[in-house]
Structure formats: C-alpha cells, structure tokens
Length: 249
Ligand code: 13P
Image (cartoon, rainbow, N blue to C red; front, side):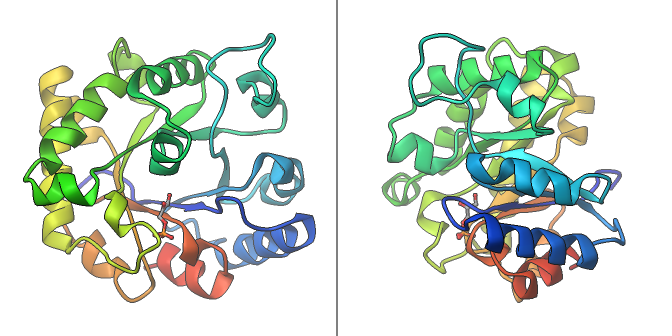
C-alpha cells in the first residue's frame, strides 16, 4: 500500500493555554520519528500557542471548523484567512458534533470544504452514521450521501488535498469501536464511491481515517485493515501517554 498512515488528534473543546502547550511540547518530543503523518487540532484560541510549538516539527496544525465565508458580517465565526495567518494547514469539517449538535447540513459543509480547498488548506471531511442508521442497515448509504454531498463540485486536483474520516457516531466517546472488519467494509465502500465520482487512481490514493474510541490497544488491529489509513482520535489524543503510542503504532 503506498498510502501514508495519517494519525490526527482532535482535541475538541479541551485544554487552556498552559495544558495545551505542555501537550504539544510532549508530542513534538515524542513524535520526532516522522514514522507516519501527524496532526493536532486544538480549539481556535489555542492555535497560536500550539503553532509556535509544532512549527518545524513532524506535526501539522489543524483547526476543528471554519466559517463558510472568507470575511464579513458573521458574528462568532472564524475565517479561513484568519486560520491561515496562524499557520493552520488543515481543517476538520463535517464532524458529527458539528452535524448533530450544531445542525450543520451537507450543503453548508460542502461550502466550507470548497472554500478551504480554494485557499489551499487540507480538509479532513468527516462522515458517519447514527446508531439507528446502522441498525437499519443504512450505514453505507448514509456515508455515501455525506461523501457525495461534501465533495460536490470538488475537482480532481483539489481532491488530492482531501482526507476522509469515517467516524460512526455511536463509536465517538462511547468506548465502543467499530470492529476492524466493520470499519474496513465502510472504508472500502467510501473508496469505491471516490472511484465512481473521480477515478480508480483517486480511489486508491485517498486517505481514509477511522475515528471513534481509538485507543493504544485497538489501533494496530484497525490499521492492519487494507482500507484503513489512519485515525482521527478524540479522547485518547489529550494525553501524550495515549496519543504517542497510537501515533507510533
Ligand atoms: P473519541 O476518540 O473520543 O471517540 O472521539 C473521536 C472523534 O470524534 C475524533 O474526531
């Protein structure tokens, strides 16, 4: 497999400056090997602090969201231009917490995806089904729809800057992980959607991360699967003792 493993930490709404700096420093020290591709995504207010620490290291800097417009009257939003100024290289879009708590829909997410790509940022586009959708046998269909809508009007050239993260909503923060087989099956189906939308080459090249209760003791089995190319880690990304072993699996 020529795809590079990509391990990302989504810190969600955790940490303040001091604890974020301590975590970032420990990760920079612990992940000098550059064995895989690494990223941390702190809250907006921590980006500048963390940027100063990860700069020049093996760890990329990500944001957890951004506005769908470049600038203007959008109270409470953060612009792609403001993120870039801080050294942000990647933005996580369409996270299930954005979809389900803050009611972001596919068309809003697609607008953000296109703007981020236009500005040259890498996008981690999150998709994933609810428990009731899985139980109704609709997991693949839901993910396909989210991938298609999220990538609407995204060119083949821009797709090279897109990573997909499959995060089954029922596995996020619950301690329940998809089995490696279940994850691999959805990843394979997402890969075939990319093949149909773009080309077999694009399908083979796209990185698909798994997210949802990834821990040091389950990461290797997940990554061993053909179609699983990395992890988007929440809870276990908040401590060096758990994130470093995951990142170096
Ligand atoms: P947990 O690893 O805490 O389940 O969170 C996964 C996630 O939502 C990462 O974006």
